[in-house]
Image 1 (cartoon, rainbow, N blue to C red):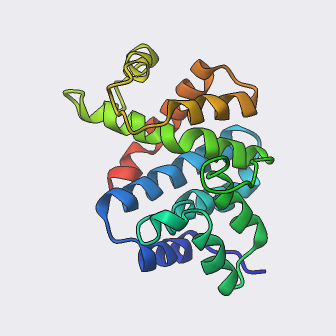
Image 2: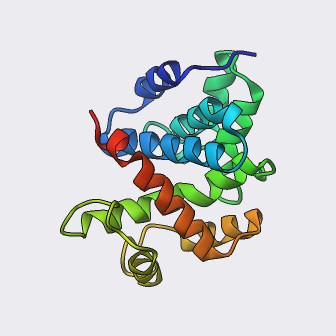
Image 3: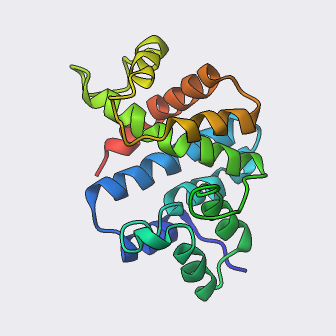
Length: 189
């Protein structure tokens, strides 16, 4: 089974995604997953975790009705590693697939995918347009306002925190820290 480098993952993603929003989201989640690998004791797998983050929504732009199912087909046709296929698909658990996140990486992807969108939206509302000066208190206020970033499924975020055995605040704080650490890379062209 084949694994992919970051550049190969990015090239594959670009075959199925053109929209700036989807590409930025893939980069963000990839960076967040790399950060989590490095801070949660999996530094030797940081590249793989980043690849999972980059490819987690591989099929979403072209095949939204088959999300997390079509991506498995695409990756299997290319002979990609089953760990990669499973991990990327598991973030759709309970929504589009029945692949329950089991590995810590899968749980982190499940928990942080939606949350990165909320944090990104909150950053855009700030005068700085940045997460660098965002504090947990401010993020929690946006999180609690169900009208803000209404498309973000907070139940998924909370379920993910539970899977990890973390309080919601811990997930919010760690994901915010991950996005702060990667902000320059995320914003680079």
